[in-house]
Structures are given as C-alpha cells and as structure tokens.
Length: 393
View (cartoon, rainbow, N blue to C red):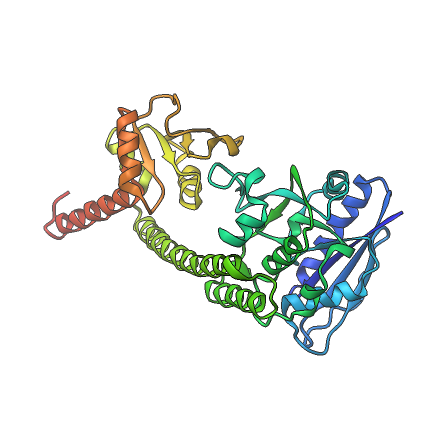
C-alpha cells in the first residue's frame, strides 16, 4: 500500500492542527483506505511544544524542536524522518480537498510531481494572464516568475527531491519552494499538470508570502544559493537574477496598491461612521442598477454593501470572467454583451483611466471609479455641514 507523507511546519500554529487532521481524515475516507497518510507535524518553535495528537485513520508523528530552523529547515527535518513514497509539503493553514490524493496520484503517472490548480484569495489563480498549461516550465520558472504559489499544489515523489535542496539551508522564509522547483527542473524532473482545483491558498496577515521584505530577502537568497552552488550558469543564471529583481519590484508595487486600497477603506468607513451610505448617495442620483468592474477585494465588499436594499448589483465585469464562476452574481468580460445598467463602478485603484475609456466606448452607462464616488460623498458631506452651521437644510 502506498504511503504518503504530509509534512507541516508548525510555528505558533497549534490552533490549525485539529483542522489539518480533519482534512487528512477526509482524504483517507475519499481514497477508500487505499493509501496510508502519514502526517509529520514539525514544530519550529522551541517555546511552544505541540504535545500529543491522535487520529484513527492518519498516522501522526510530532517532531518537537530545540531551535528555530525556519520553514526550509523544518521541511527538510520532516523529510528526513518521513517514510512515504510520496511527499506533500503543506503550510499549517492550508486547505486541501478530500479528493486531493486520489486525483494527484492518478495524474502523476510516471512523472516526478503532479501540480494541481488552486484557489487564491477566493478565486482561480491561473487565468488569461497566466495560463496553467504554459507556466509550469523551466523557462517560465527561471525567466519570468515562480508560478507555483504554494508547495501544497504539488505532490512529489520522495526520491525525486534533489539532495542539493535538502542540503542548502535558506535563512529567510518564503522562497524555498521556488528553489525546489529550480533544482528539480535542472535534474530534468517531469511535472504532470492536474487541471483539477484541489487546493486553496488562504492569505492571512501572518503569511510569509505577503511579507514583502521577507520575500525579497528570501528570493535574493535563492539567487545567491543557485549561483554559489552552480545550479544554474551563464544566460540562465542572468535571467534568474533579472527575475528575482523584477519580483522585488512587484512586491513593492503590491505594497503601493494595498496602500491605495487602505485609503479607500478609510474614507469609506469614515463616511459610514457619519451616517453617509453609498446606497443612499446613488439613489439620490437616480442610480438603481449597477455593475462592478473588478472582482476584487473592494469589488466584493461593494457588492455585499449595496446588494441589500434599493440598489441592485446586476453583475461584475472582469477580464478573467471565464475563470470566475460565482453563484451570487454573473461575471461578464469587458467586451461581452452585458445587460444595461445605470452605472458601472470601477472598484480597482490602478489603471482607472484606461479601464474607464474601454467601458465608455462599450456602454452607455455612467462610468465612475469608487474613489471618485467616495470623494464626492465626502465633499457633499462637507457642504452639508456648512449649511448646518448657518442653520439651513
């Protein structure tokens, strides 16, 4: 019977352990007991022991620690003590579907690894900008970016994990999986593509993947280790350097976008606290039906805020509409034949003018950015306060 080892570094993560065990128990039940699942909980916090854990269907090994080794060190430590034919590296807060192992084992065939599709921030990660079938390749991973957002997408043959990856000890958390894919591709390992969505990457404030400073340090360390160990040379090494530096610029751009989003939320909450509602503002201007451009953080919040009363959100518009199958509302492409509405609200904080031009050319509806709406609401509120000072309504 096949043994699959699931290696989970745990750092301040005892609250996730019960949920992880339940997920794996469901996987065992789905696979009808045709494999043995071995869960290795690798504690990386010497100040917070994990203690004992129990499951009737999953073999659990708790590996306590006397020092903090970091994510890479914890994964390698688990790898040294696992007994499986296959290995899955999970983060402590990851979600996998019950059919994960049955589907991945069926897909892997004679390959060294099977990569599944995933949900990231509640939506499909691979889309028209990053087609799944094209990005899992040596050329893309070295010369463009790391398209595998989490090692939890990848079921690995244990014997295919390169010795050099085990030996290198990355000091900075965040990019050890990128180093793993590079090492495997240099060894001519084959990656099978599983088109099923089997994994969900949950983004929380503690995720290393959203810590820009740590990710930049870790990715630069990956380049340094690749260069020092001769894993890549010549033009490929130069391309990796450019990719790492481009990734650093991307991390900084994301921080800038989040800063802009923060000010949108700040203005929105300020207005809300003063009793000024977007719904009322739109109704006073004769807006009863809207579409939202951008199935994004702000877009979703707009939908839930508006779609409770007098304003109806008819649909979303998004360039990746074919990858967004939402039960709550339809999603159309920007150039699709969408129903008429009174207003299209752009929920994004970047590239607003180019989006506005495209929408204006395609629709007779009024097109407004959410930032403009909130700014006008704020100005209207200020004028209303002036009138109150002079005793006018």
